[in-house]
Image: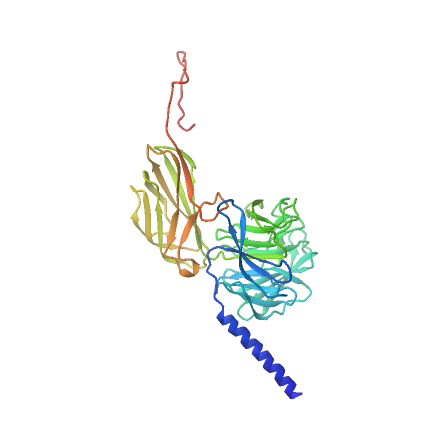
Length: 432
């Protein structure tokens, strides 16, 4: 009998040693705001990166890695502190870590309450805790379980209670996501077709602050971008095919279908929003020559750290002249700016959260047509990409240029003749 026990312990030791070796051999992802999906098309899970096709605005799935036969992964989350993804096999509650090759390596078994199935999860911005939502089949989501990712212990469980009724929450959320800037936990209730928010201290579900949308039927994969915009991937109310990317506005609860992609089955999603990203917009988007426009550069620092020594550059078109820097909350040394078409600032400090650099620009008198350009933040840590190109948020394509249409200032009286009576006034409106 002692020999049998000895063989068992030896086998367990070899398995653990082999698992630890594979963990050490893994390489982390590079965090640049990307989205990921895990899909179970059959008996095994496939990890994909979700990319927006710049040619048609549709979704492309780029395969990162395929698991072995029988290995199914769900409840996917991205950890900011080590740049790995974590997921569980929902049939065994075994925890796996996923490296940049897309292959999952066993970490440990989790002692999650066995009365629930865990198909959705998210990791807190500080990387300390993975939160799982427990559901009884597809009948009701009843519990949140909090797992310490250093000890792998379940440190807290919360029963979900409806804020509107004070009774057990009557919701079904197939995934959850954490806002990278506020740390608030959100889901999408497929019963009411609405966004819900969870109180991670009490388990109270705010199921009465967002309206029913009647746009999405399910939301099997939820993820955030660095600006705090929530996205989901699944099917619409009018389709049985899970192939639509949704964008959700947390200010009013609206849900909009923004792109389509391949069919996803038994899906879950996460993103790495814990980075620095830059958006560039202009007002107005159509302007007359010889007038001024305002450019807004919105910086989202969701890296959880103050970033110092950052460089900002925006090479504007010829005959665009910077006239004023209205707001610069980032400080730094301005090498080029007012009086030129180049804005170059070094040694900037980016605090956590969202902030805006705002400048006014005068358009040259002889310009006409569409003018596009991009700004760039550089001297960022390599772990979050090293640099960030600006994105035009009015399009679904990522990291595209911001455009301004310039129309010539023309006044012609050749085609119309105006007759005025004594005392009448003729007004010319140059903005029409």
